[in-house]
Image 1: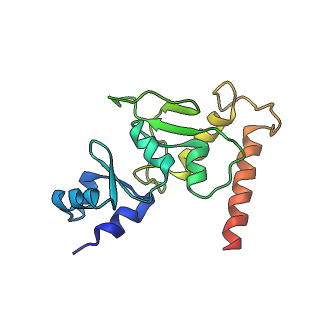
Image 2: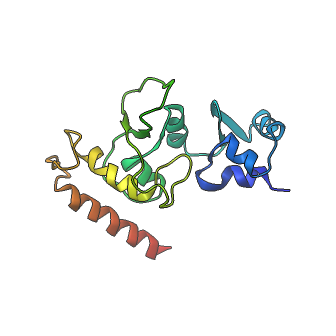
Length: 171
């Protein structure tokens, strides 16, 4: 029998209930985990491990997944932007909560869906693609950021990749 706590903690700690049921867990087992505070119900059809990333939980509450600099931070990749929570939603998403200050919702389909995506976060490649939108004041990945951190979006992405590679060699 599979360990529900291990399955809940895996992959970012946020899962569709149907995924956990496909893994062999019962609806009753999920309800018990919620009652025992080992898990939380995020929204209809979504369950998170009690220790899941709060930004990831908020992304699911908003009807999407972490993207851009928020997803890069959750992956442990450095980001020099303080953008709040960036959420990627399907254009067909419904029953969405309103955004709070510092939150941003984009309406995008994954371009690289099989590149390491987990249920509460887009893939690292899609996060890098969206980072250009986060970093650009006009919301266009083709424009440059002329703030203090400054530089071309490509330069900012190169800094992220270099930092990620440094962090990997330090492990």
